[in-house]
Amino acid sequence: MSSLLVGTCPGPPVCADVHTYLFVDGLDVVARSDSRLAGLGPRVSLRPGGPLCPTDRPRMVDVAAQVHPEPGPARLTVRVRLRGGTVVWSDLMYPDLDGRVVEEVRFRLDQYLGELERAYAASKAALDHRWPADV
Image 1 (cartoon, one colour):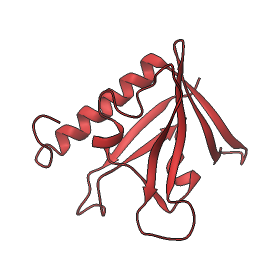
Image 2 (cartoon, one colour):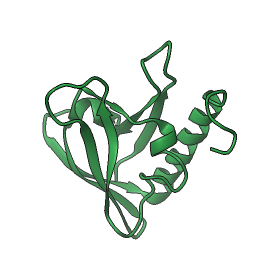
Image 3 (tube, helix red, strand yellow):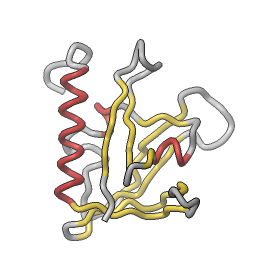
Image 4 (cartoon, one colour):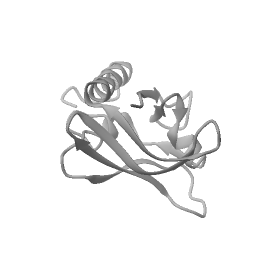
């Protein structure tokens, strides 16, 4: 089983915009997939019931987009699905530490959901002055 760790960038003045970092087994999936992309904002990707929340029915989820328009793919998309107590991300294409291509990762449901909840709460608290109270 893999582990998920979600980080967030608070935006200006640190960075151009608020975005998420998705680390799978310690590797930044977005940067290793396409360094031209940045993770979507936590308000979009981490919210309760949001796109990264797994369901029995597989779905394609955008997790990153181009910051500045350049030639090539404009988005990074993963397929998210729930299989019993396991969350599966597939349709990946990033190198692991040995240079082998990672195409699929599996997470324990409790670790995965706990990390999404933790990261959402942390980013919401840090950015409360930017977000409406009902978000």
